[in-house]
Amino acid sequence: MSLNKKSVDDLNAKGRRVLVRCDFNVPLKNGEITDETRIVAALPTINKLIGDGAKVILCSHLGKVKEGPNEKESLAPVAKRLSEKLGKDVNFVADYNVTGEAATAAVAAMNDGDVVLLQNTRFRGEEETKPNKAGEAFAKELADLADDYVCDAFGSAHRAHASVAVVTKYITEKGGTNAVGYLMQKEIDFLGNAVENPVRPFVAILGGAKVADKLNVIDNLLEKADTLIIGGGMAFTFLKAQGYEIGKSLCDDEKLDYCKEMMAKAEKLGKKLLLPVDTGVAAGFPDPIDGPVDVKYVPSNEIPADMEGLDIGPKTQELFATAAKEAKTVVWNGPMGVFENPTLAKGTIAVAKALAETEATTIIGGGDSAAACNQLGFADKMSHISTGGGASLEFLEGKELPGVYAADDK
Image (tube, rainbow, N blue to C red; front, side, top):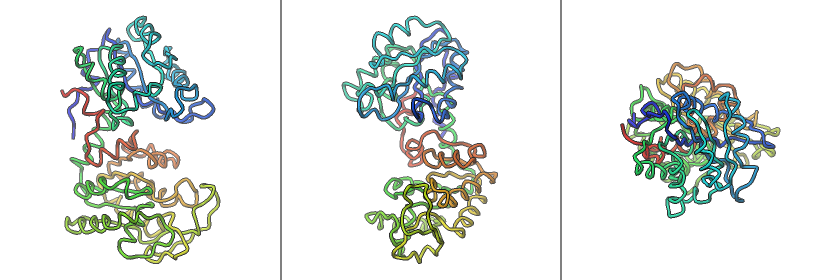
């Protein structure tokens, strides 16, 4: 699925105003950035445009902005860190209006190679709404600041927001180019090839809490993968669908028939569907989440009625690790248990370790799996860690992502 979109390499950017939608939705604590991964990921595209002599205008959202514009969700700390990383001053437009007079003036004063960062796009409520009149107006104001547009925010590419997908319409109207950045291109190449053209055997590992969150992913990956591994909280719905006692474990009762359908589909297609054979159980969910917890391991078809399954057991760890090590392509989305707890992280660690030791192309689908790889120290051993949890899931479902499809074809 090389989607054959124009990339930042196809722009003739010298002297042109290029609006770049980044994903600077970084975690903040007391106004300080605690993880700069997303800032670092944006640097290759920004540096390329600076080197080409473009006037680089950056925009991004940060946080949920539920209580209206506020300093806690301002992009000011990002501007400061970006200036350090780029080794040059980033002119931050602090105006809550995002595209108002201050932004217009800042852009008008730019020289080739200068960088301006606009305020949090979600400070304009219209950003959030699916394209309607308000969203359209904001998208047009963004386009008015620029000649060309580059989307490098894969983490937001599944949302048809003003600054992600709608802005492209107005750039096209004025004769400009809409391209993807290096980060987006990498995501498209890795995730697209994994799903559409994998080197086989192709193993997909799904975890996390709910079956409902991954209905279409399970269905789509059964068509594409040779082996589908299911762990985490979602495995218990499959186990219950087989008629097993799962105690107090998490279960999507409304999805039992769906799980039966998927198991029948796997059998019909001749695909392996691996479920846990043993489970780490405790009397209840740890409180606090990283607090002490007394765990014992039981066969997955013999979970006591008064116990809750919270991790995969040692035999399952070995089963899943062996399947992963025999693969040539592995996609992993979702932890195997309550990985935030040291006692219940063993299953997730075992899977991460197996992926770190394999020669296969290993693709981590963002979200909690990416967090687990980073926290457990395996990140540098993976071929690719996606920067977008929701976006990578929708990609694996086979959905069209608005932020990708809005870019111009080559």
